[in-house]
Image (cartoon, rainbow, N blue to C red; front, top):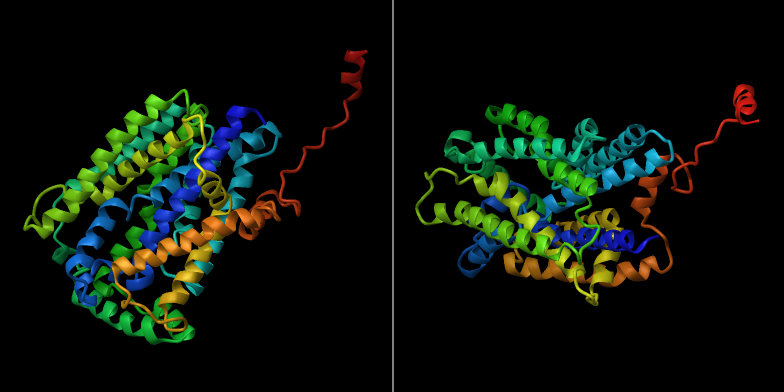
Length: 411
């Protein structure tokens, strides 16, 4: 393996591991308050310093680390497709199998464990992204900008929650209040039944839910496409040589992303609920901020010396799927009634401390695991299914024997 490729693989693994830290902190709000309760702090008595810290998390963390995962999903998709092409295997066929299993794992995750699953959306989006396999970097950029522009246009329109019936509707608030009791004290069977059978929207918003399910993969596609483009143009092939490139983009994207997200979060709290563009923080601000975080993290690989924690981030990243699902197991056990029952009781700050403690354990345990095993259990299953090989490796294409005509030409 050449040095540039080694550094690129290390950087991508490290970035994937780093993103899981922010994903866990953001998900801790859902573990503790529910998918719909995290936006209803008044129903859980969140106030004062805890409310201010929640605002900070929604500006700096929530919605800004999951896009990094999406970006790396697109990046890895291109690298896998290129590897399969070199072996004269069919990239789209292998990728489709991978996305199908990802979709299946996500549905099982959401049905039997936790409502905040994102693997289902990733699997759905993967099939959409098959349209862009083999496309030129310029094409990928144009589509990413086009889709992000559409999202930005949606965010520019002033949105009155009372008109949508979401979040602030009486039906949804009753659902959240009910979830507080069920998740906090219920058995596993009761919680699973509530999660899968009780409607959080009400009949009047059923069409909105259908719309969201159908179009969500398209709306989050820009980060996948930008990741695919980064793989095509070699954005991370030479971190040291591209130090200035990463520094400038980190500064610009982080500043713009924080401003958009802060505006969307703080303006309504200061009496500006009807101002235009409040949705920009949700529709494009998180993605822009995530790009800033990506380039800022790349700067850690631009120096001569490696930070001592980088190998740990890389180990977490190599086990990203396993670590992500383990976060769900641990988080639900801590907060749900069949575990320690801390649902809605720990507080935002304490919940964040718990999240950091869980991630610290993964930083410590992941390298130890990789000393004995080459890959994680979920990663191994994905590889076996993708390649239809128990070794978890792409099959070598069997070369056909030359025809008599070809042998005569050689002789």
